[in-house]
Length: 617
Image 1 (cartoon, rainbow, N blue to C red):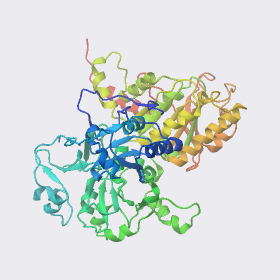
Image 2 (tube, rainbow, N blue to C red):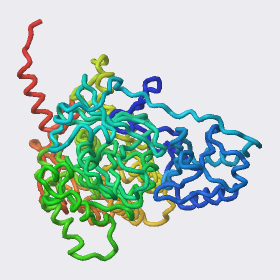
Image 3 (tube, one colour):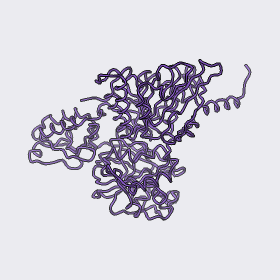
Image 4 (cartoon, rainbow, N blue to C red):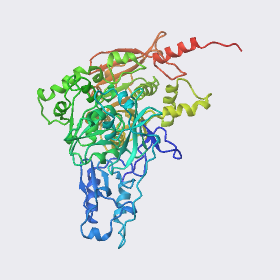
């Protein structure tokens, strides 16, 4: 069985500290159960081996359902197995079809597929009696919880809402910190975390274990449909509507990520309706990305338009929430469609054009004018002469996006991860920490909250394991941006035999297909052909055939004229822009201390130096 380890986080949380994830990203991977993605053969082999030992799993939407035998205290007596008895709902375990992660929410066991299968093959002792189960206990961070008060209810500003309704959906009030508290439960209905809403500024926080994740669900257990919302305000609004046909489910981390540990809690629903609030541009495509993870065939989507806004906005505008719910349309369309089927999508994009444009750069405002934004599902090529600063620029480019919540996976084959991470940290801080080591812990703690991941490959690598690692990151960590630096390191070691240009074309086609299929932005750093120094690079200068620039949505070229002209400058040229067609240049002035090309960072630094008073020795 292939093991994890292709991807590792930037900084790991210390094991001796409390293993709590506070609404940041999965910066720790438990390699005991985090697998690389399964191929169909491994999945079928696992099911066949289970049948050979008289275990008959049930095929779910995203997981296999089977009796948990991995944890000794949850084994069923052999006599019950001989009678053909099955495990009750509380003893169900789940095997993720994509990653092979074995998860038992009842006894909090997580393991790899290989370890789980080995435990199933161990014979059960005759006359075995299951002892009382020891449920995993989550210790709340808020011990002073009380029933919701009228004042807390009024602070939400939802017309007609009563404190009795909030108490009925499981809300509690913490008076000292002025927040509403909700419990998160896993598929076995055990409390595994908590989600809070601060009434003062309406921001939300989620507290859960590192490798544990639950959902906030309201509704009886016999409903087969659910509405998925991204924040607590929408959850409260819909939960108080008393919908007869749908449960209401609040995602734990809004639209930032959907951990695979949450998926068993959604298995019982045959239909899932995404009714989300898109508060920023980077999560515009979150519904489609999540739908691919939880089986898009059962997913419906309410497109955000003026007449079909998020639930709390619809209530404020006195729109009929039940009528809007009936307008949900499938996320997945057939191979052939019509304009009528796409009409709502087009209207939604026109009414939310700034969000459709993508995430705006804060360090590079010129890029916002030309490229309009960073969008998922696109392929970007960056090229430039050797030593022109391609990696340095791309690290700051990706850091800018990561600081706005765009989860990023770096595949640096040319530079080791420690050096790349040090560059990113220095760009984040704005100055070197060599002589200020006392500040390192502070900045490292701040920086590890960034949704940055690194592949552990170095040097020449074949295509297959790299694509497997990227697909794993896309599924498990909801990665939105993948950077390959650089493409030439993936050539010459694959099973392909023949012309090197043909091999490069095949690699580029694979990344183009991946970006489109998984709705992930892929950036490829490529070397140019050997050109005369006095000549400008063009799209034809990219190494290989024309396929690279034909497949790309954006082509960025670093032009460096400092060595060929007394007044030569370095600048970034936008040579291709498929989205808006705008072409142009962005001057690149380098700040060596901050390793930054950003004019915004440099201007802020100069203003700071002017304000700081000078003192004489």
